[in-house]
Length: 148
Image (cartoon, rainbow, N blue to C red; front, top):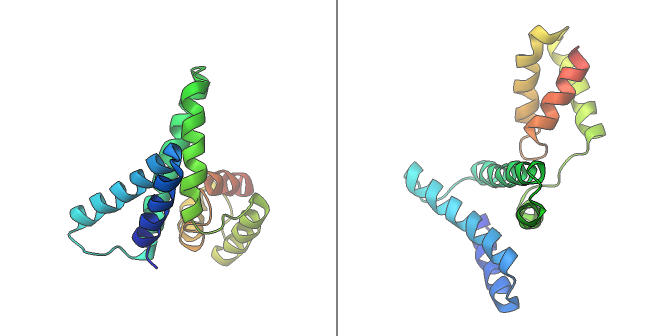
């Protein structure tokens, strides 16, 4: 079942349950998928494109929630965080920091990276291997920590 079909099914469930947060979140995903399909000129997105799309939506909401919290607007941050939980259901299981660090150690060994000058090589491989399973910001911070 494609992501679009899953979203449609979840939309029906959310409508019946009158869950406004879920409806907003699911409509945002559906809208992003339709927008990506029309921009790309393709009828169907592949699973990698769908994962990137969902990750982008999660990142947007995390950034918004962080900004709202910094400004003391908890009333605006909480709905964003609730939407994050719903949207994350459509991502593959996320790796924890220990698993990310272990994979980065393997990548550093493979590439023979010795310092910060090799960060680009390590980040490139890490991003490909952990696409959809880890946040880029987390990967970047662990790579910096390991290479410095």
